[in-house]
Each structure stands twice: as C-alpha cells, then as structure tokens.
Length: 497
Image (cartoon, rainbow, N blue to C red; front, side, top):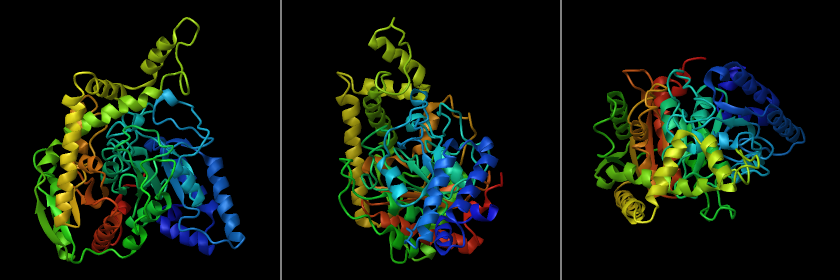
C-alpha cells in the first residue's frame, strides 16, 4: 500500500493503462490509507467507499475490453465539499446543509467522472468557503499532516491535507481569495487558481460569484496540469465561462523552462508581517529563477496595498446576496416549523442555528455595505479599487511574463491561534487576494522549508488571464530544479502519520 499511495497521479495512470496495477488496487490502497489516518487528520467529511470502488471497477472493465483510457483514468481524487455530487452529501462545511443530497452533479464533478477519475469522497472546508484555516467548518478542524497542531490552510484545508497525508494523489479546491493556493503553500503541495471563467462554476455552491474559481490541487506540477485539463473548458451552464480553448497546460508542464522569460517581483509583497523564513526562501527562489535564465524585474503596484480592504467589502457583499437562498423553506435544515411560527420566523431560526459565526459576520458586513446610503461609499469604492488593481496588473504584464511572490506571509499557524482575531486570520490571504480581484491565473508550489519552524513555504506564480500555461512552464522548471537539488519533491519530506 505504501508504495502505491506515494506514486504520482501520472505514474498511477500509466501503471493502470499498462496493466501493472488495477484501478481497484489503487482505490483500495487509498481507502485503506484514509481509514488508517483520517481520524487524526480529519480531511474528509464523507468517504464514498462503494461509489469509488464501482468507478474503479468500471475503469478496469474498460481496460480489459481494450478501450483507450484517458490520462487520469483510475486515479483517485478528493473533492472539496462545495461541488454538488448526485447521490452523496454536499454540506459546504455547514450545518444548514447537513445531510443534503443533491439531485445533480456539478460540471466539475461530471467532467471528473467522464475522465474516469475515481472520486473517493468529499473534503472538509471552512463553512461556505469563508476562512483561511478550515477551523470554521461546522464539523471540526482539519490538521496539517506536517504538524497536526497546525492549520492546513483554508478554505480548502481538507483537500490540501488529503494530498499531504497521501490519502489521495489529486484533489479539487476552490479559490475566492486564495483558498487553493494558501492551503497548498502551508502543506507543501501544488495548487492552481485558473483564470476566472476557465473552470465552470455550475454546481459549485456560491460564496462570492465574481471571485470564486474551482481549480486543481496535486503533489506535482504535472499532476496539477493533467487535472486542470480534465476539468477546464467552456460550459454553457455557466454564464461567466470563457468560450475559448483551454491553454496547453500539460504541454507546458512537460516542457518547463524560464530561459529568456521576464519575471516580476512586486515590492508590495513583502515587509511588515512577513515571516523571516518565508522571505528567505522566496529570495532564494528568485535567485534560482535567475540561475535558470530568467530576467527579474522590480515592480511597483501601490494599489495592491488596498486589495485586502477591497476584497472584504466585495466578497461579503456578494455572500450576503448568495446566501439569501438558504432560508429553511426550500432545501437543507429547517428549524421552528412546528405550526406556531411564521415563514419569516422559521427562516430566522434556521439561519441562527444553521450558520456559524464567520458566515454570520460576513453576511452582516455585506448587507451593511450594500445598504441604502452606504452602497457607493463602501461597495462602489471597493469596485473602483478593484479596477485600479486590474489596471496595475495589465501594466505589469506589459513589462513581464509572470509575477512571483510568497504565497502566504507566514507558514502554518497553530489551530486556535487566530480564532478570536478575524483581522489576523484575513491577513493570511494578503498575497493571494489581488489575483482574484483581477481574474488572473496563479499557482502555488513548494519552495522549501522555513528554517525557524521546518514548515513548508509556498512560491506564488501569477500569469495574465488565459495564459495559465505560463504557470506550468515556470512551475515545472522550478520544481525540476528543486528535485535536482534534493533528489525528490518536497512533499516526500512530510512527516509520516
């Protein structure tokens, strides 16, 4: 089992295609790993053992019939519990949807099944994707496999922890302000936020519709590219979906190089609040890029300092609108429906019992920002800042091919350390938020361990919209250089559970 679970997704797919392994063997190995360690990690909210084995058997039957298998056929995957899945629960980490079983698949779910990817189950997350630590889940926090007393990032901490604990070689996350990249950074894995509109949002429970984006999570850049290609592409069910060919991400991942590329370093992405070890590993990564043939260009983007403030007006405003549908009348939990309460009272009681503190906080912030007399002062002003950030990115990409930065200002912090300080929690997304506001593509990949705590540090790569292939070209080159230096990917150093 230990040999199978440490294979990359690409290696697993090749061994299944050649008959060296069966999809059932691979699935059983990962299910056994989940059973062995998830009581400690708590990466999963629901494990679909029978469904996963049925999918695996179908892949093996295809191979036996001589049918051509896709690039990820038979590879297990952990799916963030924000995507609807026909026949198995989707809770979004919230009590208000506890036990809800959707009658349909999200487009991402459907495309995974069409690619013969084996879905192991649904992963833990901050409630409605609101958080940076997975501590806001109504079902309890997830631990970071590097140190179970530390957070695995958020909101997609379950997906990142499943990768780092070898419970799955692939995972799916969503990124509204950094919720794919920040968990990847603190768990030593790879996470990609595709260009906004590059992956369908149909069937993905909405938090902030103009910012939300699903994307791939993996332990290697190539695995992330293979998954990206499987889930991306135009979807008529999503009005924001881009009707254009998917960038050649797999080809870029197989041919990584930065030779002759111009790489931007933004001066706003460092300074007060950044951990010394994070800055040290980032500076070393910049020197590595230079040694690989890249030209480094210093950039000044002053509006980036306003990104956090703008985000925490725009995202809560959209959340207050999106979450209005959870009223206790149509689906999910219902409290107080005993014949003595009005519909309005049932809605109020249901929301009081069903939503957690962070969700309530953001609904109230957003409702206030959208209220009469405050709309222009708050929400309108935040949208103007968003336009400035987008324009600064556009000017920057006239000078450089990609931008690099630390993914997070610090390594993983202790569970409970920031629970009573929302502002400190929000600062975890300081480097990731500008990309969501602009709609660009971005990746986080490991760039070493911080010397003061021996925990993973993430390098963020940002590319222009619809130039996602640049992420993989640069990421693969950096990853290859680290593998040459250490002899193996960083994730291999994660402590055994």
